[in-house]
Length: 271
Image (cartoon, rainbow, N blue to C red; front, side):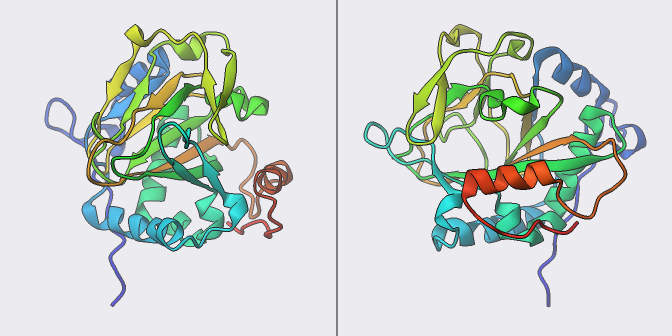
């Protein structure tokens, strides 16, 4: 028998009723996201079965070192703190991830926050911070890695395990999405670190497994070290508005970006 893909959990509002039209994101959360440039959903939006399907697929890539070398990045300052492995484009390596309940839920979150009829996958990656030895993810703005898309992009950071301050949950600087792009310096082999970050403004955002955070391209964000005994596992997906007719294949500029980042010559995925 095939494993259950799980289900989406539609949250109840403050009055105990479901959100309007079955939406996953409450109106006040949409307002908060626009004002602060980030959002924490401190409740599971899918059940445990849905999480297990994604975790099992990503575990294969991390634990069995099945990802080609071009897809494996290092975000940590290894000599100082330890390894923070990242796999980019897991949806290319394992296309079945796009057919999961979790992916559909994350797509719905993006639709609601962008308030458009269609969105398309722009990029995805997974970060599994090992126990005890992983260093922090440096403060940065995503636009530094993707300067051609200083525009509406929803980045959804989905927790595959409880993300706590101890194991390295996300942190944000509220309002930084409306500020200038900071100067960044290299951090580790593949990372970047923003300079001049006022840490007194930071907001720490723990979420349970099945919960998530969302941020914009210019929002300053980071994650702490994993001081726990378990792996802190997260799947991060970027969505952008799709104002054109639905397309069956990846757009050429996104495909060329994949090739540049990975050195791979995979065919563009269908769907």
